[in-house]
Image (cartoon, rainbow, N blue to C red; front, top):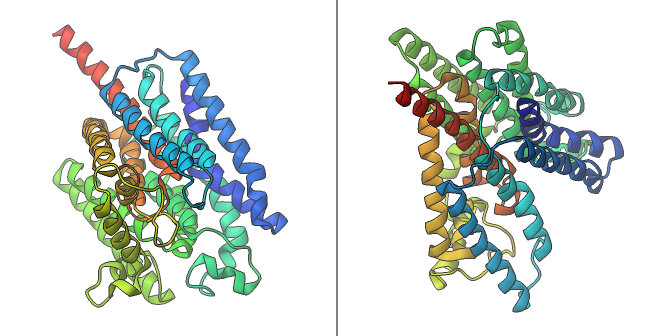
Amino acid sequence: MKTNLLLIICASVLFIYPASIILVTNITGDLSDSRLVTIPVRLVVMVALLALLGISKIRFNRAANWVLLVFSLLYFVRIFIEVVTNAPETYQSPIEFILYYFSFFLFPALVLSSIDSHDIEWDRLFRGLLHISWLFLVPVLFFYGSFLGEVQRSEEVIYFSGVWVNPLMLSYSASFVFALLLSNRRVNSKYRIGNAHCALIFLAALAPFILGASRGSMLGLLGVFVVYSITTGGFAKKVISINIFLGFLVLMFAVSNFFEVGPLLRLFETFSEGNSLGENARLVRWSQGFEQFSRSPVFGDALVLHASNNYPHNIFVEILISTGAVGMLFFLSLVGLKFRDLVRVLRFENRFWVVSITILAFFGALFSGNLTNQAVLGLSFGLITLASGGIRASLDRATQRT
């Protein structure tokens, strides 16, 4: 039962949510219609999380949970201050800041970090996710496959009578597929997906990854490959993993050259010496964020960048301007605790996919989205603690037997 509920939650966040947006917007031609399906998907996730609470032993008294609650309280205080001081209207209303933060980030992270991991079949959960990824890949190929080679990035499909689609959504969902494929080598052979099927999934996932061309997803995948190579045991296996890593880089170089854009090329452009601050929107936003933080370094001064009335596309910069150094202290403590759990989970190969999703979500938060919309980060923060909790229990039982 727990495994099925977790599969619903993970699949909804990683693949069904973006797939539903692609299907509805392309069928109706109206981007505003996406809420007709995204809201129900979010409600399904919330119900599944509540069901998990109902059938699980609750272990709320974990340091990460208390740190998360204190940070969330500071963030809610910032929202309250914005309301009572009649701050200028932002890209979201105060109630949307609260509801999105709670449902996308806080509630999943808190629930999954508080339940026990008893009866969770991690291999079966992994296999189910990899199969369900087709629910995302098929609509992408059907609606956007023909634009490969025609556009540099998915947002340009509107010039060819296509329906606009968020390139970040495409790229990150594709990177989750790649991470699962890499993790397939570490699960129990009984649940491992065959090579032919993996190759087919890989080829299908290239389309959204190329069309999305996200820097954060590219950097996150590089991080996943590095961790995979370091933690692979045996010389022969390390050589194989390094060859996979190098092969992927060569493929991305070829893609970048062929399409004259791509995640790897855009990543290089972000940090290239010849790229001035004014030529890169990300660097401009980050610079504006640090300047804004310097004026109110203790508690921050706003939910958004004053210069653009938008978010800075970096979760740390956003936390600095909204909750200041105090909020950042608690958030860094939370990240540190999750990193400790991640290191523990690395001992168990069949849970490497959880590590991969966490790494991708973290790098994604450095480049994309705002704090209230970090659904994958909230999911991964909860999953990594849930996976680590089972390890701690196993170690404790082993210690008692000896």
